[in-house]
Structure formats: structure tokens, C-alpha cells
Image (tube, rainbow, N blue to C red; front, side, top):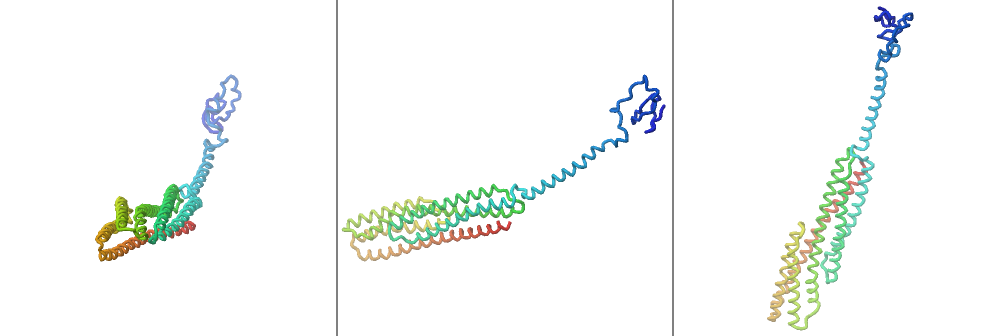
Length: 331
């Protein structure tokens, strides 16, 4: 047996290379006629070339920090975008545009409410009533436009992904727009209802004004005109009963029916007194008409208070919207 001078392991006497480490054994004289030495692919590489697997360790040593660095970058980007897909700057810009549109809508709505309140003064002639009805139609279109604007704004806000730390602000802003939507919906139903009410009152009001301004030529003519007026009041009363008033004006609607229902009966009493020539009864009915007019004016005051209430609510919402603008800038 021949010992390897490198690793000290025993090899066959005729071996030219160590089968364990590949070192040449120095048996050159025996090389002729001997088999070729084993392929170095089948043996371990010489120790002088380094320990097995050292290259793989070096590769892992630089791959691991690279992955750690990549993870840090990803986390930093997520924190920058708040984990919600938007940066604070992007969120502020998107919400700022929505707030700007809504603020303009509040200004337009305030002007329309002022027009309605001004027109609620008792009209002196049918033309003033007609102008008021046209004003209600215009206001209804403006309020409806404002309501659609709020609905679109609410949907836009729902589609936003607020950055980290802004979630509470975003939830409060959504709640604010939901309250604005409900308030504008209430106002829209009120204006639409009033438009229908005054359209029903236009015909009997015009007939009553005509009767008051033009004295009839004969008793029969007076009776005919009173019959016509009573019929128009009856038709308007039927129309009023078929209306579905908004929740905020249901009490007012009941008072309206109660007051309006009294007038045809007063007209019948007037006709009876005229036919009988009962001047005393006519004087008494004149006092009754004055009481009825007072009740009618009270209805107008009650309606004005209802609009003042919803106007105050809208003003409070407008101020709250401005507070949100300030909070948005401070994010």
C-alpha cells in the first residue's frame, strides 16, 4: 500500500494518484501500461482550491441584504402613500376640488332661498302670484341641481382611498356630505310641494281678486261670479287633498286644508245674504272674512318659519363645510 503524502490515506501500490484527494503519488515508473487515473470530476477538488460550498455562501451573503433593502423600500412607499393608494397631497387635491364645487353650490342655494322668502309676502295681484310660482320653478331646478351635485360629491368621496392617519377625517367628511344630501332632499321636496300648492291656488286667487276689483252690474251677475269662485275654490281644495306633503310641512298642510275649506262656506253665506237682501248678515260676513284673512296670513308666517328653520340648518352646514376646508389644509 502507498500512503498519500498530502492526506495520509492509504492507496494501492500501483496507484499514480490518491483516490481521496487527487494528489500525484510519485509512482511514475509504474505509469506505462497502467490504467488512466480516475477522472477528477469524480473526486473532491484539492484542498488548495478552497472548501466545498464557499461560493454559495458568498452569494447568499449579498442576496439577503438586497432583499432586506427591497423590503424596506416597499414599506417606505406604503407608508408614504398611507397604505390606501393615495398620498396626502393627492388626497388634499381631490377633496379640495370636491369642496370647492360644493361651496359654490351652497352660495347659489342661499340666493335661491332668499328669493323664495322674499316672494312669500302676500301677493297683491295675480301677476305677483304668477311671478312667485315661476320663482319656485326656478328654485326647484336649482335645488335639484345642488342635490345632484352633493350626490356626485358623496360618490366621489366614497371612491377615494384616504392616506394613513386621515381615515377619521374622511369618515367625518362622508358623514357631513350625507347630512347635506338629506337636507337638500328635504328642501327639494318642500319647494316642489309649494310649487304645486301655489299653482292650485292661482286660479281661485285670480277669480277672487277680479271679483273684489270689479263690481257686478246685477245681482244675478254677482251670483254667477260667486258660483264660479266657489267652484274654483272647491277644485283647488280637491287638488290640495291629493298632494303628499313633505314631512316638514305635514302640519302646515293640515292647517292649509282647514283654512281653505272655510272659504267656500263663507261664499255660500254671502250668496244667501245677498239673495235675501240681509245687510246685517253681510256686515257679519265681512268680519268673518277678516278673520279668515288673518288665518291665511298666519299660514304664511308658519310657512316662513319652516323655511327659516331649514335655511338655518343649511347655513350651519355651510359653516361646517368651511371648517372642513381648514382641517383639510392642516392635514
